[in-house]
Amino acid sequence: MPELVNPIQWATPVFILMIVAEMLYGWRTGRVRYEARDTLTSLLMGVGSQVAGLMQKGVVLGLGYWVWTNWRVLDIGWQWWAFVIAFIAEDLAYYCVHRAGHRIRWFWAAHVIHHSSQHYNLSTALRQTWTGFIALNFAFRLPLFVIGFHPLMIAFVGALNLIYQFWIHTEAIVRLPAWFEAVFNTPSHHRVHHAVNPRYLDSNYAGTLIVWDRLFGTFVREDPAEPCRYGIVKQLGTFNPLKVAFHEWIGILRDVAKARSWREAWGHVWKPPGWRPGGGMTSDELKRRWQARKEVAGGDHAPEQASSVAAE
Ligand SMILES: [Zn+2]
Ligand SMILES: [Zn+2]
Image 1 (tube, rainbow, N blue to C red):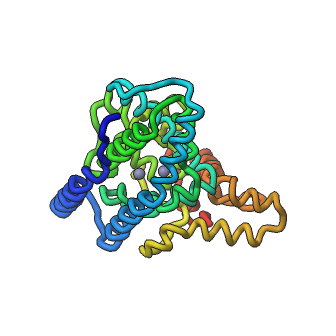
Image 2 (spheres, rainbow, N blue to C red):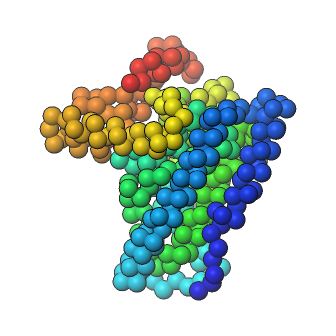
């Protein structure tokens, strides 16, 4: 078994240098926007996420070992090509957990942190969850250990996947060569993922390979005529890291406490974010209303103001 370093620790100084470079570029050109307290919150969320990761690492790896030791189907070694296949398999698992993170409120409570900034710059990439462990996100990786990938190999390629996703959080790069945009997640694709414009909601869940979204029908192309507005449908309006980290979990607890039936309580946890008994303002509903306005307006660029007003 090879000695594997933690690539995130190795990459952190590069992240900081790239953020400073992007800030300088933004000040010179006005093409990238930074807000000091937003960036500070993102940095604190990044540090907190690493601390949370260290605290839960033993349990998650232990569980991984247990599954791998007792249930694995194949004996996959440490060949270079095993790393390549592991990376692709882990990227698919990431797509699944990320899609669940947007479509099921339980997982959204952990993932919303990453979307809580109204800015889109390299520092946004550091805004990572503290509560992925509570959400049981690691369950999505268990099938990889059943296949036979060593837990340390998955941890390693998972970290590489996260590192890949850093540089795509920028408005400085408009579009890359067509072949690259076709295969890989890019700044353009991921801007769409972070946008709250109804047409862009719930799309482009990819980690590294955008092919998963193309395959599973969740790909949406960025339309230069419709600039992305970033954040979450109901903006958070706080830079307090504790509120950023836990607000949706508290929201779930409150809603479940007020629920009038088990069915309602279940809905508050497992239905899409924004769900309320009798409907609510989910992304599907926002899209439906936008579509209706588009048809009335008879054009492709229907007004969207109503969505942000209605998004309770
Ligand atoms: Zn997301
Ligand atoms: Zn992102």
